[in-house]
Length: 264
Image (cartoon, rainbow, N blue to C red; front, side, top):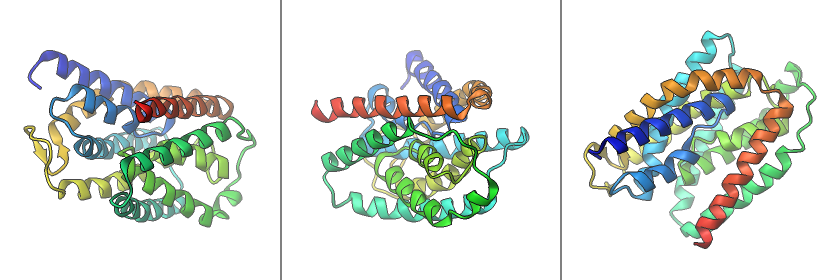
């Protein structure tokens, strides 16, 4: 961790995470977890997952702050429902993951991403009214449960699931879905981080507490300050038609990468 290449790699990773997080409403765990395992000496999967969740708390908070300043706010009632469901799903997913082999969890995740990716391409571009948003609280809570489970099991913020599922269920408009996703991720990942910081330490790396390395998380977060403004500009230009193509393609690309990892 003392080489200049390591610091540059973490800052570049942060830039990429900040860009896709602000543009698409995903936390960036899909990039951070594999990158931590590849570039951080001594990093284990559990600490990579915990460090990713910890970093996303600050990344999502930064994006939420930027969007609120720009006048884009998440619906408060819907946010509260999603936060409650995500935290509950996160604890349930963490508990369930202790009883399932890693291979089973990985293939369940691959299946979910593939189905979501295919279905995202079929999103209806029709606008959602405020009345329609308020009438789907049960659906929103179910989405939040799935979001929490996926976050706890994989170390991602959950936006990769929440954004396409929210658009599919039409519980939020295209203009506010990224703000909604980032607002919810703050609390989802905060709960996940709390569980990891009190977990038994595995990685013998400086600045590691439980299963979170705060130094690596801080480096990545510093990089996001360069990528987030550009991501916010991209988000403002993404129509629903464009968003469904980008999100669908991203979901399928990640699914294919995970298939190769599972088979390898």
